[in-house]
Structures are given as structure tokens and as C-alpha cells.
Amino acid sequence: MGIKQNLKKIFSTQTETTEEHHDKRFQTRYYKAMPDKAIEELKQIFERGKGFEIRDYSEERGELIVNVKQGKRALMVVTVIMVRPYRTAIDFSVATDTFLFSDFGYSGKMIEVMYSELDQRLTYVGTGLAKEMSTFR
Image (cartoon, rainbow, N blue to C red; front, side):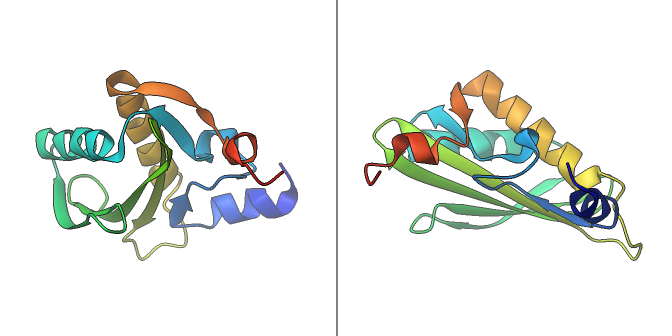
């Protein structure tokens, strides 16, 4: 990881997952599930967990917007996309509500916890698989 990435990580109040993130922990994860099953599992996690409030859900976009009210306050956006039958990509974006210049890794830790919970509930396939799955090579 370069100096630029380290500085961004230190002085950040937001973390999000992407297909080609430099940190493998924050690459898009793929699961063997249909989007409706993945969203149902996510809803259960948020409903059973303390301090989560589902603010909005868009079936068309496959997005859940969640307020985190316990611990540090944060806004979490979860995107669920079917890339092919029984292959669903899940991305997170967590922005911490703080007046400080950094959330000291809180948003990243929250993403790790969410992925860990999903790994227990859904069949994990891999990370950053878009190039493998692409039919336009």
C-alpha cells in the first residue's frame, strides 16, 4: 500500500468497497445467492442487531440505506447486484458522523463485521471477480 493510500485511510471518515480496491478486505464480495435472498439476510442482520435502523430500501437499485445509531453514528449504504444467476455482488459504503478528521478505522471495521456476518449466512464465492465473470474479454 502506498503513502497516498495510507494517508487517505488515516484521514478518512468513510470507507467503501469496490471491485479493485487496493486493500483486499474492501473488495466487492460475491455470494452464491439470488439478490432477494441476500437482501433478506441483510435485513435480518439489521433487524436483529442493536443500533441499526433501515431507513430506505430500493428494490429497483438493490440498495439498502441504514442508519447506525449505536457506538459511533454512521450511514451505511449496501448495494446488492446480481451479476449472473446465483452470483450476487455486495458492496458497502459506510460514512461516520463525526466532527473529527478521522473515524480511526471504525467504518472499515464495520464493513469487515458485516462481511463476516454474511459469510456465515450465504455461500461465499470470492472477491473482486468482475474480470473473471466478464464475457467481454
